[in-house]
Image 1: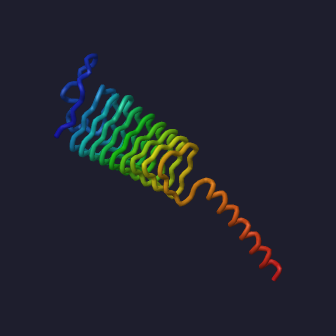
Image 2: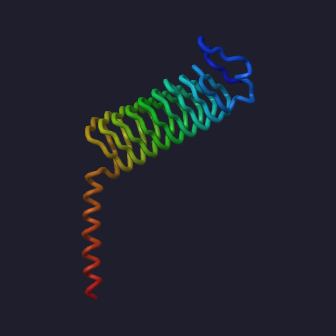
Image 3: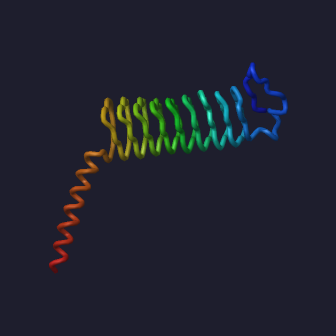
Length: 187
């Protein structure tokens, strides 16, 4: 299916903008709809994708993605369902059934999501699995994380290592190493 572009009243797009020669790069478009396509760079105010893949999405206003694979996303508002992405940078991100390697958002809403590294000022999660999670204000039904760093936490957080336990284990490991060094130095 060909990619579609929203109509821009001030600057009408002509048919050649939709040709397959130009399908990898969209620039200065009001909006772009991509269905069942593999594209390179997308640059528009609003981007909607379904069953597609893209290298880079730069959406000034918002990006909505369903069942797609994306390398990098930069946008104000991001809404994703059943998506995999390498890096997402946004003001507000909403994820459902997604996998994101690096999430860098001011506010993050998660439901059944896997994040390798998540950095957010506010996180609201129904269910989330994460390797490293940093959030100043967290409200969660369930977050499972290897390393969790946060200030205000409300909800069920299951973590292997927090900042307190990391400091305690680091201090204990330092003491053990110091005593072993003294013990083996004397012999």
